[in-house]
Amino acid sequence: MSHSSNHNDSQEATENSPLLPEESIDLTDQETSKLSFIKDFRNPHVLWMIVFSFTLSTIMTSIIAPLVQIVLDVVCLEYYELNDNNMNSTDILSNLIEKDCKDPQIFSLAATRLMLYQICLYVSATLSIGYISTLSDFKGRRFVFRISTLGIIFACSVVILMSHHWKVIGSNFLFIGAIVEGLLGGVIAINTACHAYISDCTKPVNRSVAFGFMHASAYCGMSIGPILGGIIVEATGSALSVFYVVICALSVFFIFVSFILPESLSPELRLQNESSTSFPSPKYIFSALIILNQTPVYSENIRNNIWKRNVLYILSIIYFIYRVSQAGQNDIIALYTTRKFGWTTLENGFFFTLQASTRFMALIVLLPLIRFLQGKYLTTYSRTLDLVMMRIGLIIEIAGFTLFATAIYPNMFYFACVVNSLATIATPAIRTLFTIFVLPTQAGQILGAMSVIESVGSILSPLFLNSLYSISVLRGFDEIVFWANSLLFVLATFLAFLVL
Image (cartoon, rainbow, N blue to C red; front, side, top):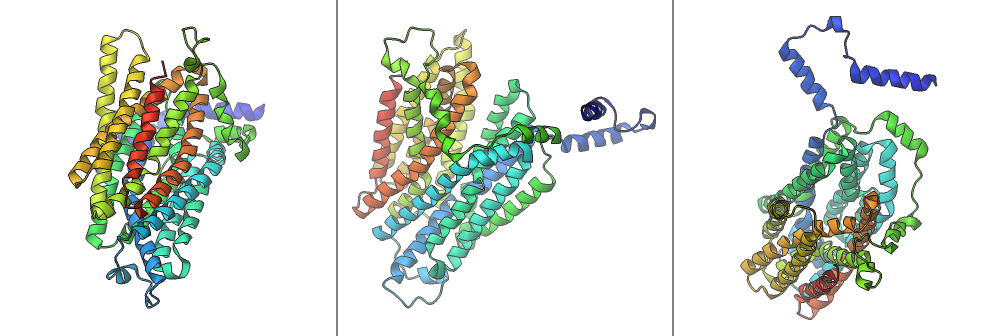
């Protein structure tokens, strides 16, 4: 009882009383303003996460194309080492000068390595994300930021070590970095902690707007990161230099979250959560999908309509196809353009920047415009608009992948990128449809089910895409991976028209 009384007294003193006795306060307006700024600076705020999201997405997207290039180079050297035992140096650049790395067998092996890397990363992250996310409720959000950042630094260090000593440890050593990064949460855990941080310091009525700003800042970073990585490679002549820069940037990032970023979760709440939290077990990962069994919420009679009764399953299949198509897409595009058009890391950086910029514009300009028109011409909310956006987005995906497959010149491939990226308007529409087919009190449960679908799709995506590319490149039909994606979205579009 006394503990509760002391706690209340401390809260009252903190919230309602000045830090100094009233009679001792004799500050000028300038000094008061300065103290107010310092106080605001040390308080948790949404702006911290906006800067946070922009910075991290810039750093992480800068290594996409360089990682593909490094894996391709090392696989090329390993391939030739089988027939050439005169390579005494372990340095990549000195050995690649006289090597032809355009052989289809080399690209097939590189696609397999990248597939295994992504699978190791996503599987280990899926197993640990529930535990780490729960741990943040009583260790604080900064704890997750720190350990996950250390995991990414370790993975980047492994890439550097493997590049310098590929002849001794081999390219398979790369998977150790992916596993450690995944077990420590990686970008997935950081993203989850960012959302939790925003939830800690915003009211529910403002939360969706805050999430929107955070996602917009992430897309801004994604627009800058790839081209920045390409510029560094072009300036230094080595893809490995990007990883040195990234490790330095992440080290500064670690110092920032450790000593500057204010914690959003109060010690009282952390103590309370510690006494009431039970940790999830990996065997219960799929328990969130139970909500898909329930009857969807409708105003109409659905008893005699099999499609309406199973609408949540239909939406789940559509969303699963999205994740399978997108999660492992960028690695394949980087390999495809390197072989097809002879693109360098810089040119691939331009492509990924264009991709992120188009998606950013679609979400920031096109989507709000559609919502504005809806509010102007519809007096009440109707799911019709979300259904239309989902269907149009899926049709655009078909067109985009078809254009990828038929592009014979780089400019045509860039145009296909713009078309394909505009399809991102379907994603928020699918999320909205998921939530309106359940009760308002079940929004968290259905979003949890979506997270499970997303995790499984992210694991299977590189397994499907990289395996398909690995087989097709050996037969001289590299484009089949884009045709396969196009067919997947034909199926998704057919299912979308069953959602009523």
